[in-house]
Length: 229
Image (cartoon, one colour):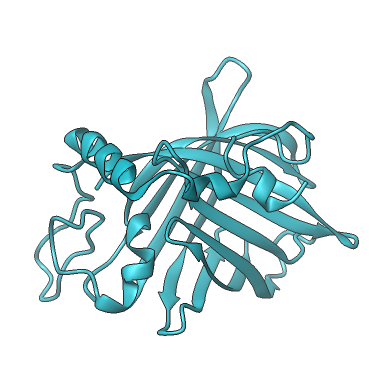
């Protein structure tokens, strides 16, 4: 299974279940996408991430209607800005298969980068939260040639640098070029790829694939709804 085959459904990675292609993220017309976003914004447009407001510089904002203007250099990443929340499935060498909840925040402060934060929590078979899971933070940058740089730090003791590019106006593909693991970090995490894409429902789908032997295999995937922005 390729990353393009697993991003649209939060299925167990590597399970072989059929899933729509990431190319579906481009199948919705521009006017339909705008109309759908406008409808969804009725419940999310008034919300933003909290800020203390007492720094002499702008607070981060995950709502394009508030705070500083988005830097012109980030227009190719504009659809990502917001807070996204939902569920997914994982299949890791360390913990096997399990379900998780996730929140991803893409925010900015007017400068030419996006801040990124991902928080996960484990979910049991009854749908109950049973503990915290992986946590990541980092920065997304993109240059005038639409080349994306994603610096990602894992709380488990990993620092990765991803490079990639937009596949279209609603999907982005990244590949890890450098992976550094601390002495206490996971020894089984190989290099990989990540895809992010807006689905026809305007939800955010993503999948993480990792090299196992000589083959890329899905490790995590999720489908998230916009809750802020």
